[in-house]
Image (tube, rainbow, N blue to C red; front, side):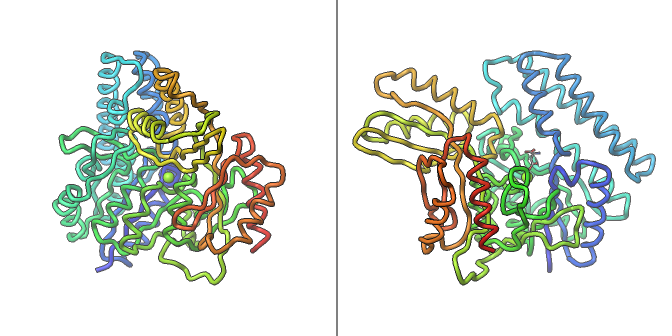
Length: 469
Ligand code: ASP
Ligand code: MG
């Protein structure tokens, strides 16, 4: 029995042309696999718009959030107008879009009447979940129209999570029960479930989300639980790249990565994959392919067990925001790390470990990674919360809080590569290095540099990777 899970990101469902490619890729694989499961993101940019809607609801700006809802409606309706759907299906789909948006507006009204200082993710999750609900319906209707048996499935009915709203963690045992009751029978009867990524629900049924980019995580958990043979991630680029192509012009596709390399690449900033998605797949040695939806015949990137490299080599460089704390004194870090940990959990619903800590007789420095899954404003929110918290203990917490960039080179066996490490530091020239660390899986070498130097550091290191090829 062969099972394939395919995940379609926002750019692969964002336009009518991309949706036709979705249809093409599913149709192409149905004859090759016994079972197929599809997981979809919201249309490109829609989740951002929904977050904005929730923010406008918080300040009770009814005109503002209604305007975005109207934009979302026209965008989705325009897309289905361009799809080869028959009239009755088009009408059913239009009615579903209207119903989902009207539910979303109900949520906004409830936020507007329960105004509080910060918008709590418990409220915004219920609003932003609409994006995937809309796209899953559209994809399912399109496939159905082309005689592919399928049904849209709401992730909130399958993915059971904790209540860390905005960044929830799936409960695998409870989710497995739902998968067995719902998805496996569909797969066995030759039906393709088109599951909404990114969203889940607490055991009590409250909607949660798995963090930005969370559709990958849904796809990963479901791949593990349906015992898939492969997971394919369809995206708008050619695969995992040696650097962010928006920052570095000559970035190129990386043909193969080990699980550890992919996990570190995602953790240290490559937005293509969700940082927590690798573990469930690595445990089962389940291969992941990352492919470009516009060029489906290209092989893209394969993430699988160790490709047996002979020499340690660098494959990619990435960067991510880090938070830095500095104090002009030596001493125990226990108190401050506890305070940071608690504030982080309260503000963003996540835990993270100190990434770099260094001390001397006269000063202390700590640096933490802020994962991309918390969204673009996460660093700011956390910084504000920390400053407020520390102000409560001015004597004990004389820490200066700032941001740094963590620029990370990825490769295997970096602990055995002193020469590579030396070259890496050397290629940075005059760039100030605030701290450095070798990752525990020996696949990453991270440098904390001033935020304004991030791009230049990226380019220098990428230049070195390209030269060594
Ligand atoms: N739509 C969600 C986001 O924009 C989830 C995803 O795309 O993976 O973060
Ligand atoms: Mg993504």
